Length: 326
Image: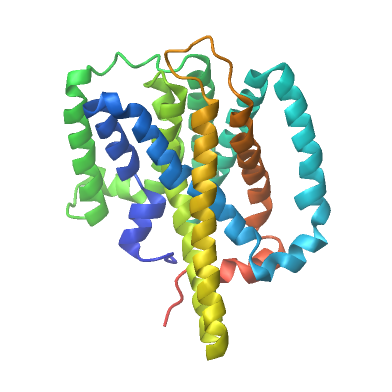
């Protein structure tokens, strides 16, 4: 199997980033008064940086001609969609939120299918499992979030997290010949893709439930995009004269600055736009629509960025996805 970074890091960051929900749930359980800060922190550090990283791929100099060639799909059509979304928002913000959740579900699940292909575990059976479990959890969770929350008593949750963590780290380090451990390890991508929306069945706060599971998607995306960008930069440095290397370093600094500022702005809009839990009657602010619009564009444009049947993508992104054998 081709490696993205290394065998162990691929499992830890791409095929099975289960450490994210385990840490997230542990913090929520043991520090309930900080739940809002934990959520906002995860949005700032992982969620919005993952949305911002799409732009680092899209606006890369090697893609500018490709964008101009497909200007209608990348720019014109999305502008019309923005006006449509804003118009519907004025009548029913809840309708846009529902569309957003469903679009997110499709986007996240499509990535899960792609990850399973990278791990060489893709099959028709596995695709059906990922699609059916993901969308069942998503739809049931949106209709009645947290309806299974009473199954596990709160006082046993820490013990449950410890047990799952032990299985996880044993699987990662391959320190056991157990058939169960090997079964888990051989199906990391399948398990991850299937269970991303499972927290919706156990947590009644939709935003927190989504962050717990979809956080694994954020980690996967950030890992893959940053790996591709780093390899492209290294390739540019290797093939560039010394005088131009300063320009490349400046591009790196500008990219990191952009991602940080983007994340700060969008997280701030989210924080301002979503009503507090103790203000049930308060309407969702128009400020929340701003990050939603950018997120919807992310869902849409990713269908082009990772379309490896496109010759441009095959030539300009695919070669930097896997580690090259020396």
